Image (cartoon, rainbow, N blue to C red; front, side, top):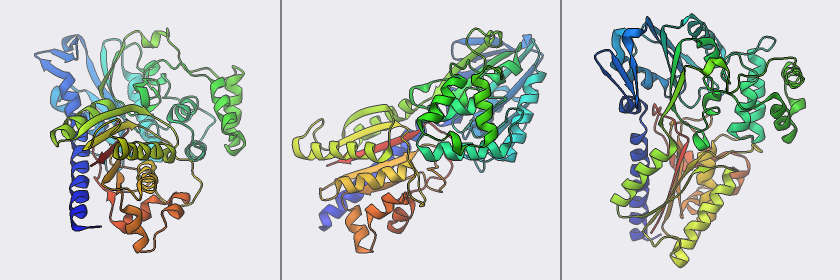
Length: 448
C-alpha cells in the first residue's frame, strides 16, 4: 500500500467514525425526551397531547432499557418534585444521576436476579396507581432482558437457559420476544393491565425493525397480537423445543391448550387510557448520518433501516455494492457513502467472542479484499456488540492483508464467530462505551 493510499484510507476511516457519531447524537435519549416533552404551569405537553397535572394525585415513573436512565434524568428535569415515585431497570453501567426515581442495574442480554427484583418492584408500583394517577413509562432497547419476571411455575434459571438457546439458534428479535412475552408476568401488555385504570403514557426509543410497539422491550404496555400457538411454531421452526427447560416447554404447551391465560389483546379495557410515542428510531440516526456524509462530500444512499437476516450474508451484499460502485459507478458515483440500519442475526457455530457488528465488518473485509479504497464501519448504537466491550468494528480493503502479516486468518476467525479477537489484534475495534441510546445498528460503507 502506497503512502497516498495509506492517507486516503486513514481519512475515510476517520470520516466513517464521525458520521457514526453524528447518527448517535440525533438519537440521544435524554434529548429525545426533551424534544417531545415540555411543561407550562400545570400542563404537561407530550407531542401533541396535553395532560393537566392538576387532575392527577400521583405521578409515577417506571421503565426499563439500556437508555432509560438518561430518559429518566430528562423526565426529572421536566417534572422535578411533581414525581411521586419511580423505578427503572437499566443495564450495568448504563446509568445517570437520579433523585426521585430509583435506578436498578441488572443483567443484559441474559437476565439476572437484580433484573427480576427490579421488575417485581416496578410491577408492584404499577399496581398502586389509581384512576386519578398518571404513570409515565420509559422504554428502550434491552427492556426485554431487563424485565425478567417469570410466570408462576417458571424460574429465573428457566428464562436464562431459554434466552441462551434462542440467541444461539438465529431466531429474530420478533421471534425471541414472542416467546419472552408468553413466559412473563410483565411483558406482552401485562404491565398495562397492572397500571389500569390509571392514565398510562409510554415514551419509546425503538430498537426493532419496523418500530413494532409490541416487540420493543416485548411490549409491556401495548396489546400483544402474538399467541402461544405462534410460540410453538417458532420452537418447531428452529427445532429447539427439546433444548428448553421442561417447565418452559410444558408452560407453552399448556398455553396452546388454553390452560394458561393468553396475553391481553387489542380491545382489552387495560388499554383504554394508554398512549404511546416513539421518541427515537433507527431511521432518525441514519438520516443524521446521511446529512453528515453529504457535508463531508460523499454522494449518499440509504439502503434501508429495516435490514434483517444472517449477518455474514448481509455483509456480502454490502461488499457487492462497493465493488459495483468501483466498477460501474452504480448505484452511486464515488466518493460514495452507503448507509443501512436494522438488526441482523448471527447463528453461532464457533466458540469465539464477538457480536453481529464485528462479524459484519469481518465478513465485509473478506468480500472487499483485493479492491481499493473501501471502508466499512458497523456499530451498535447502544455501544455494546454482543458480550463485548466494543460497539462494533472498522474494516477496509487492506484489513485481510494486514491480518495476514501477523498470522491472522480471517476465514478461521469468521468460522469460529471470533471477530472480536481478530479486530482486537488489529486495533480496529469501535469502542464507544455506553452511549445512553439504543436504536439498533448503524452501518457505514465509504467508497472512493
